[in-house]
Every structure is written in structure tokens, then in C-alpha cells.
Image 1 (cartoon, rainbow, N blue to C red):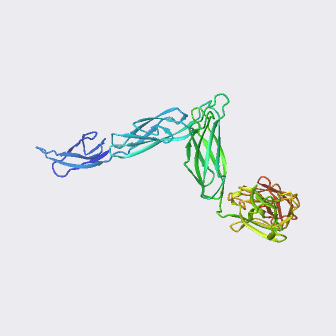
Image 2: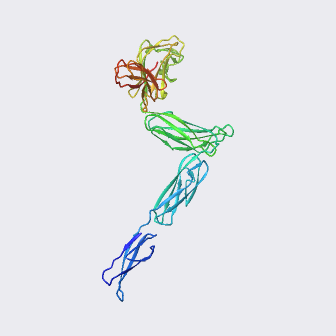
Image 3: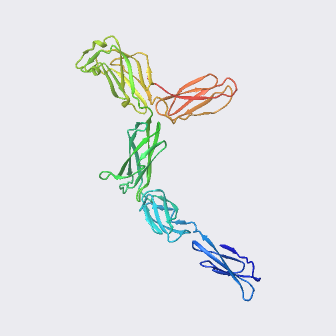
Amino acid sequence: AVNCTASATGGTPPVTFSWTATAGSPSSGTGSSFSTTYNTKGTKTITVTGTDSASPANTATASATVTINPLALSVTASGPTSATIGQAVTYTASATGGTSPYTFAWTATGGSPSSGTGSSFTTTFNSAGTFTVTVTATDGNSKTASNSVTVTVGGVSGANPTQTTINCNPGSVMVNGAVTCTARVVDKSTTSPSTPTGTVSFTTNSTGTFTPTSCTLIAGPGNSHMGSCMVSYTGTVVGQHMLTASYNGDSTHASSSSTFILNVRGSSGKVLLSFSGYDVDDWDNGVGQLQVLVNGNLVADIPAGINSLTGSGDFQLYDNVKVDFGPFDITSYLTNGQNTILFKDANPGDHFAVVSNVVIKQDGNTLLKQSRSRGVYPAFSFSYTFAFPSGPTSNLTTDITSLAISANQPLLYSAAYTGSGSFSCVFSFGEGQQAKVASVDGTCITWHQYSSAGTFNVTVAVTPTTQN
């Protein structure tokens, strides 16, 4: 409302007042005060005329201008907040304020169609999930306002069950290196299986990027009742990344999901093996008396392989002498977790060699070091196991729990961790004593008894172990 007052000077009192307010409501009035409202924007003029009591009467007129601003534009969207896959849903919009006429534009990411115009909009969602339908209103002055409706789309009752699998190749990659991840969705119905359609969405529990974040299933060959699609994943931090593929379902198939553990390694350096061999001079039919294998892969055949020898004989340079071998690059043979290196004699002949000083390193970090001398002959081979990466991954966590607190009573302590490879736990009990125990399935357990009462800080360190 616009409120006005008038006063007069001179003339013959009393003075009366009359008002006019074109386009106002009311548009006229009397008295020393006047109030009106306007339903349109713009500059308006309000006029008042004063008339005194003289005969003949005297009159005087005054006016004022007022600027009326438009009301703020707002828009309301309404429609279903839940739906099933394949169900058509309709949304409507209405606008207030601003300046008419109004136009409306809709977006529905994941819907079909995904956009539209007009005061009503109908779309269909072909996968399960939570989606947002947004309308933007534009008035005659190009002002805009938006509003949204969130809709949860579920699977169809009685839909065929599905099984989703995800596999990434390679399964171990350097940080910032890309892998290809393939999702496969199979209809598991035993009565009327068909090929799943729709999309698979990908997420990670770590820091990394999927390109794209979802993919559309492509039907498999023949009557496999399977659909598959691929994305790329790049892990940007070191550790084990849990990658999840979630199939959203379609009008006849239920949703399902699966996970894959990807090892993202932190070092780009090579893993190198070196060792010493004594009296490794014999070879038979092109095969040396000493073969070195990592995870079943032949790294070195001595003396035949590394010296390109054929037939049989004695290699005099290695006869009754100690020779240092390596470094050999074994990076490509390693897997995330526990690895095995084997020294063996594959020939049936009468041989005997000695291996010592076995060292495996990566960027100066020692993964394995065994200095002792061990014999190798046709009836005897030996192996070592070592962890790769060389220590727990960056998501290592430790939780120590105690079942009792009292002096002269055995206390049970346990430590749980996550990480790749073979590890042991070293407990420090805060009074100068330690206990080293092997882990079993990510858990270490030990007992300790304090000789006196007190407050002690118990810690645990998880370290890689070497087995032989």
C-alpha cells in the first residue's frame, strides 16, 4: 500500500481534500490522508486537490510520483516423489510475482526425455535410483527462478534377479595410472531369463576418478542373457581401492552390485633381485643347474640361460667359485601381497650349488634380505616369501583391546589391521618388554602379565615378514 497525507496553508478554512490515483485501488478518495495499492509496476502519479470555504471557493492542486517495483519471481514444482522403473511421471509448474507472461524449462537428468518446456512435463526413468526434476521459470523481464522435485525410482516388483561382477585389468597399477574396469550383469532367473539393459554406476571408497562415472550395458553374444560395459579408473593415492559397480536395474531386472579391490602402488621404481651362487657351472641339454623363479616365472637359468649355452657341459668361469648375479628386474612378476622366490635344480644330474646373499630391493627399500648359504641340488630346493609392497598400505589401522586390567594377571591384547602382504605385529607393553607375533587374517593376538600395578602405554607396530 502507498500512504499519502495532505495539508493546506492560506485560504479560508476549513479546507477539504480530494485524491486521484490512476490505476490505483482505490483510484480516488477524500480527507487529509489517502491509501492505495498498485498491481502493476512502474512510475505512478497521485494527485490531491484542496478546496477552501471562501465564496467563491479557492482551489490548489499538488501531486507526487511513486515507483512501484515488481514482486520477486517464484516458481513451484509439483509431482510424484516416487516411481518405478519405466513408469511415466508428470510434473507441473506455476509462477507468481515477477512480470507476466511466464515460460518454463525443465531438466531431468537420467530421465527420458531429459528436458522439456511448458507448464507441465512428463518423463520416464529407466533405472533405479534418486533423481532430481528441475523447472526454471522466466518472466517478461527475463528474471528467472527455479524449483525442484526429488523422485526415488525403484525396481519393478517381481523383476528377474541379476548378478553383477566387476573386474579391472591390470589388478595392480602405479599411482595415477589408468586401468580398464568391465562390469557384467547376468540375468539369474531360472524360468524366463532375458538380457539386462540400463546403466551401471561406479564408485570408489578412495581417491580416484572414473571416466565416465557410468556406462550403458551392451548385450552379450547369443543367448548369454548378459550385458556388459567398460569404464576407465585412475587412482590418485597409494593403497587398496575398493571399486563398486552398481547395476540400477530396468523394467524387468532387479538391481545388483559387486566390488573389486585394486592395488595402487606408490613407487614407479623397478624391483631388483640379486644373489650369490657358488659352483653353479653345470648344464644339461641346454638347462642350467640353478633356476630362479618368482611366482612361478623363470627369472634366471644359470649357467645356460644367461650365457646362451646349448648342449651339456661345465662353465669354467663358475667352477668352484662364488659369483654375484643380478640385478634382475622382477617387477612384472610381482602381485599385490605375498610373493615367492624359488631356487631349484631342474636337472637329474649329480650337481650341488650354494646360494647366498639373496636381496630384493625397490628404490633402496629392502623387500627381502637373506644372507645365509643354502644348498641347491636335484633333490632339494628352497624358497623365500616376501611382501609387496614392502609394508602395509596407507589405510593401515590398528585397534588394541584389553580384556582385563589388574596386576599379576594375564592380559589378552589383539591388533587388527588392513594392508597387503604378509605381516607380523610387535607389541610394546610400556615397561620394557616386547612380543612379536605373526598375523592371521589381519589379526595379531598376544598375552602379557604385568608384575606390578600402574598405568602403561601399550603400542603395536605392524611390519612385513619374510618366510622361508
